[in-house]
Image 1 (cartoon, rainbow, N blue to C red):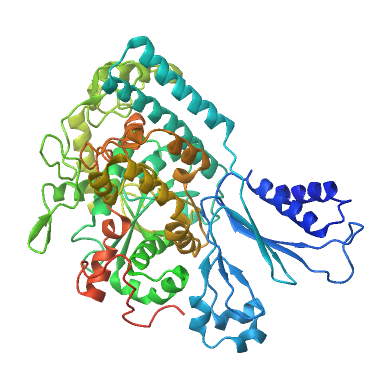
Image 2 (cartoon, rainbow, N blue to C red):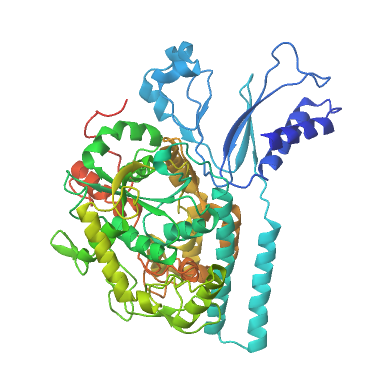
Length: 625
């Protein structure tokens, strides 16, 4: 606010002697747009600026003024407008119903409205990246696009990236394949740096809830277990204070009560468990709280009417399904699953599949390599991975080492800790003789036994389950990753039909339509619980970088699904030491959480009948009014 009003003050000083009122207002409009272009992050705004008299002072009588309103360049915050009422222009972050108009002091105008439905149906999403100005007396509207300002640091990184690519090629006379490989690695390094900054901006100084029930969690991640959410959680670990937990919220839907604590799992729930276990091994010092939000379909029906109001003006069944998943995830009402329970339940599903229509459908799908399908669960892999210590080419064990290092480097990494303690630290359960991998497995079995017998204290909440509601005010979402790095199945279909040029065009279109297709709806659903969603993958610097680099560095459609799509992000995941999720095939949230499966079947008879733009069919009119 201070930035905007400072810009207005400067503009009015510059145009003080300009007698042309139209030019004065236009210059003020331009000053506000330039000020807003300097805001880095998610925002929408409505500002009323009263008119000034010719001497620069406020007039004693009402002389009108202008309302400025709009959304950031990508439309990451919701803002709607309704111009269907005579004499009224309504601007709001959510569609307002007629019966609530007394709260807006609009009751006297309700005679102009034939029905509440006519009012609700005429709300429209305000386009992103435009600053609108409306004269409050005449209703005349003008608009200016937000100027695009590229961060000088991003320009520098892009220049260095291009120069180094040309330099390596000219000096070493590299083949096209080797050049592409080296460029991909450097591009992933730059993306990692920009994503890290984007996450830091969004979690630094996050408000800590006053409720003691959450033990001070200030940040939560909408955690599907896929590569997008895992990377965000891993980067959050660097910037959230070590004494605070980080909530990993995973939502799953089911019919009846059989799915709450047992029974079939959703694909996202299983993927999240796998990724959670890897993160616990990778960063054991962090208190990762896996919050399982299990939603029976009866709860969806109870809240159906309310969710439909929130997503208005959107009304398709796809919008309802996605919004429902986000709404319950944002609510964060679930139970904390302990590590012991997760380790016990995940292996029990190994090599099993879910029956659907008489055909075997794996819950999780990984990249196909050499014609073999790697289906999914959490069977421990014996495949060795490279040591995380820079310059080391030795292999590290697939799990167990807390550093993700080989035996030699693990000892080196424990050295400084031993020096500080004045004795051998012996921290790693995999590489220390008195705490071997076998001993670790025995200890874990003992912990599970203690959980079953109730011997563990209630404070050991990382090992047992109990009900909770996440109070974290900041929610991190992975929206934007698939749209920029070709993560959806439709992107592969486009490539197979028309090649990279068509795919490039589609990705550009995806970003341009995010404001109307995704972001407004998602923001309305998640902020309904008094929380703020932030989108690191849609950070201005990240978007600029991904827009400038060649498409072939972001994805390689010659590689199988789960490997070639979002290729650059999969490299980033491996760089920070998370590998389980790096070859998972994408599932959209409505399918991964199974809301589409339980909702569409009850409304349309099957998922096939519920096409993406099919209008939502309300089953009952109960719920929250």
